[in-house]
Structure formats: structure tokens, C-alpha cells
Amino acid sequence: MLKNVAIFFGIVLFIFFAAQELLSFEEFSDVSGSVIDYADSVKSLEANVSKVVDGDTIKVGVFDEQITIRLIGVDTPESVHPQKEVECFALEASQFVKDNLLGKTVTLIPDPTQGDEDKYGRKLRYVYLEDGSNFNEAIIKNGYGHEYTYNIPYQYQSEFIAAEKYAHENFLGLWAEGVCVN
Figure 1 (cartoon, rainbow, N blue to C red):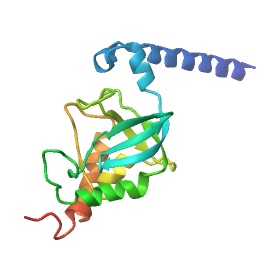
Figure 2: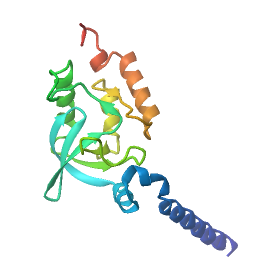
Figure 3: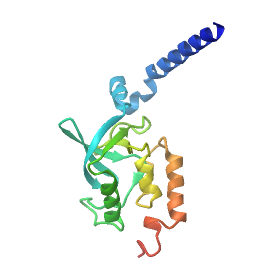
Figure 4: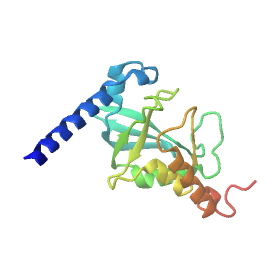
């Protein structure tokens, strides 16, 4: 009986503290603009990848709308930038993303430290595969892109830095011998 009472109060305390955490949006008001926006943005979303723009940008179909997603924490060589030539290894990075994401259902998760959108209006998200792996990190670990921090650290920054170090030390992708040398 005492064990059941302890479990009950444990659950009550958990719910209380979880509710407090969910209700404390003030610290994010400068990121999202409003409590409602932030509450909506923290939800994960499953979506089908309809197009790969380049190695760090995709389009997903949500209902009848196409949404552009910029992958958090990763930067790949430019392949479609209007003011730049195609950079070394850009086509390979884009192909890696196509091979792994195009036509597949992924889970998109925001990072409250990064805001909802970038300056171009693209939604900022981590992309998770059906097996639960973080695809943003996979791009870096396989050498198709660099770790990228825009202004402030993001949730998985240390993991992504370690992933880039791994790719570099193992001569993968961009760091393979003879690739991208001037």
C-alpha cells in the first residue's frame, strides 16, 4: 500500500514539474515571437521528402503544402546558390541526401535555441530517419558537409563537431585524399 502511495505521488510530482516546464515559455519569446508559435514549433512532424534542393535543404509535403526545410547544424557545399558556382563535392552531397531521403517519410524536429525559420524563411529542423538516427549528423559523419553553427550553439553541436572530426580523421567525403584540392 505504501509503495502504491509513493508511486502515485511520484507520478503527480512528475506531471507537476513537466507542466511547469511546458508552461515556462518566457525564455523563448524572443526566438519564436509568441508562446503559441513556440508551442506549435516544438512538435515533431512526420513528412514525406518530395525534393532535395541541395545537401542541406529539402522540401517536404505536409497536407497540400510544400515546406522548405534547412537542416540544423550542417553546411554542405553549394550546388544551387544563385551567386556561386557549384562547389567541390556539392553534387555528391546532394546525391547522398537524395539517396537517403527522397520519397521517404522522415520526422522533423525543431531546436528551440535556433528559432523556427532562418533568414530565408526556411524551417529549421533536425531530420530523423525511420530507424531513429539523426540524418543531419549522418551527413557530417560521412563527410558530405561541415558542422555549422549559426550565431548560437544548437542542441547537438558537440556531437556534430565530433562527427566532423571523425570524417576528417577517416578521410571520408570532403576529406578523402585528392578531393577538393586546389
